[in-house]
Image (spheres, rainbow, N blue to C red):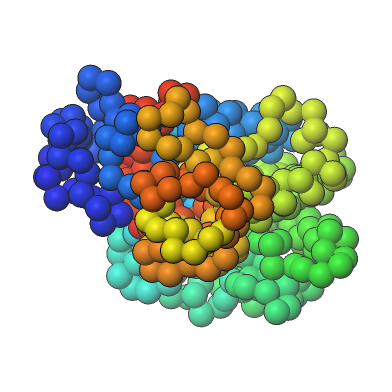
Length: 427
């Protein structure tokens, strides 16, 4: 039960609509009667909402791309940490869900996700206990990354003591990157530890190519992936893998096309069968900033992506009131750092709505957020703009991960601008 102090990011939900809200339970709340009409101002602003049609379209697009590439999809759940969105992705055909932390894993598991990649090292005795407890329940297929002898020894000692087998993927990295074993020419010391373990089951390898930058990024990524494939084949000849089908997993939201293509190239030459799994996370929400630019580059590189029907579109909107127009050509909006990401570009004004009008209208292209504070942003507008305090501006944003994590609940709106349900986030 949700009490009357439940908040949309710090502002009490309109009490007149609270009864419908309270009758929901769990992660998804379906609103009774007619829902919340955004144009009728039946909620507190600012509010973050997701366009349902774009959400479903994005889910279908990436699943079609993965299926066409003959790879599996385990989207990174850290973007939304919304179990209802995990459910949507799995219903579309995803192999599993990737996550970044043990608390995220627990949340996903308790919400019904039963195949999980912890795309990170499992570190710390208490975290070992939490994962072992889940595995002892017997309904979870779980993998984590390992990239050091010390971590492998710690895992082996604990999980052997508990009598629990742990599936691991050796993470491979590049100089100056993030995690990952650096010496791809020699990992015998790490392999020896894993091979002697009573509890560690080596199921494959993993990597994250998003840390490879520069003018020759694509060529360098391809070269790195080729080294990963060779290493995996070499390890297969040593019979170190626990299963005949070996997992290779990589790919964030920027290079998933390159990773899929490169890993699947010359698949007949592999000494074992590879199960290729990609892990993009931002496609479901998408944006109008860094991931839109990344997707445009995908479409320039990949004919397969161009052949997939539809496109990825930004599904997240931020609705906020105009609070003040203290100077000509300058508006103060009730939307700030507490509400929207600002690390990869400031929110972008898309539409404006005056209460009483039939529908929102597109804003002038020259309108631009120039600065942002905790609860306000400053927006440059044309000197003769028809904008008044009390008008509503609808924004898109860049980097959805750091917008969504500011909201405990997100509204799901239909094409009539009515929020018929909300989803909970668990950051």
